[in-house]
Amino acid sequence: MMKYKKGKMLTALGLGLALILGGCGSEENQNPKQTSDVSIADKGQSKSETSNTKQHSGKNETAGSNQSSETQTNVGKTSSNSSKTSTPPTNISNKKINMSDVTAVRLADPQIGWVGGDGWIAKTVNGGKNWAVSYQGIGTVRQIFALNQQNVWATIDQGGNSLRLLQSKDGGLHWTLIGTAPNKEFLHFISGDTALSGNAYSLDGGRTWHPISTPKNMVDQAYFHDLKNGWAVTESNKVLTVQKTTDGGKTWRPVLTKKLASPLEGVIIRSTGVHDAWIECIGDSGMNQTSYSVFHTADGGNSWKTVIANSTAGGGPAPGFTQKDNKGPKNKGSKPGPLYVVSPQVAFMGGTCPACDNPNSIGWTKDGGKTWVNSKETFKGYGESYLAIADKNHGWWIMTENNKPSIMYTTSDGGTHWTQVHIFR
Image (cartoon, rainbow, N blue to C red; front, side, top):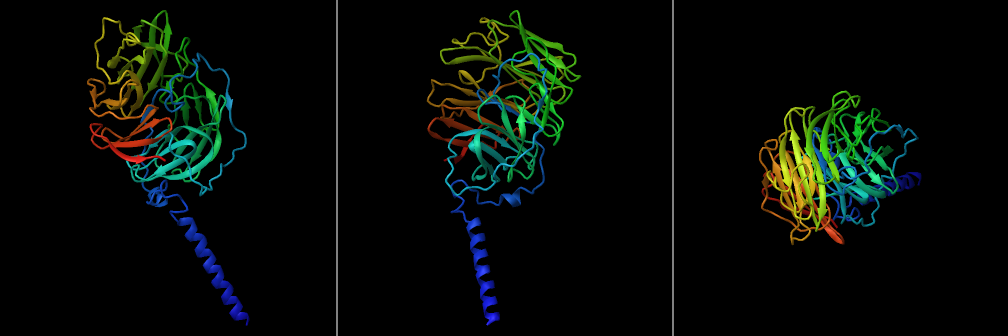
């Protein structure tokens, strides 16, 4: 009798365990429209591919891609986030998640990457065809940064002046709250411990932050490639000046000056090497048009190339140019889109045209700014667009629009052709 009961109990326990495991692995329970049919756990253990030299930005994206935070000339107060950390819930609800509005994207390689939105982060391991939600919480994801396939960070906007900082050490499968970002500028890690964001740095993985001295009359915030080498743009008496430091902000020296027809409205700086800098200067706006220019140096500021000089009727001359001096390569669109710098040779930039049926366009340079090429393809989407570029041939491009699903396109021929791979719902 005891043997019969014991066997029956073991059978029941086995059936119960099978049902539980079957329910956890069910695509139906995980919402098949948003869950990848490829094993993330298996793919996530593949060899890491460093991607910390690929920098992304774009107008109206906070931190990861927005240049227009309030201008700061010097930060004199240390931001300490050493309070006890906590882990956000990693239990993924079976409730349908609205993924239609993407607000951030990052890739580690052409196949593996992450997107975020209002209260969620998702991962793909097959180039964006399928996505699995790996984080749910409160707040909007403003930026995702990946050092490689395993080490990923995300900033979350819950309102207020600061962004919460999350970290994953397993490719985005689990996330831990480690503190707050020091500002809303572009956040990037150069190792697991060392991070930079605007004019602040961290040596403990983003838990505490310290200020870096910057020059007076600075427009927006500085950009530091590492702890010693940084770039900033200042404006005074209708002249913009690009300044450089090689000693961590202790001293700054001018390396480029340009006259201005009107005050600068914003600056975006990216760097993929000690001697490399890409400077986007945003000028005046009018009639749904914004003038802007992009300058590049690959030798530490000794020489510069004009990558883009987009003057407009509504915005006036591009920064650094006059109305009569309208020479220089042109990017499509009447406003700047996201800028993504891959290397000292390769950079992509979107353009937007609010008055056009297909407002999104894209161009690139693959020779350090000597030439600029515009794709013939244009796409719908009147919201923000987001770029994530792996190399000179492979990239992702996401278009958004209010009350409509975000759409993701990919290229494998360097931007000439783009293929729709996913509609986020």
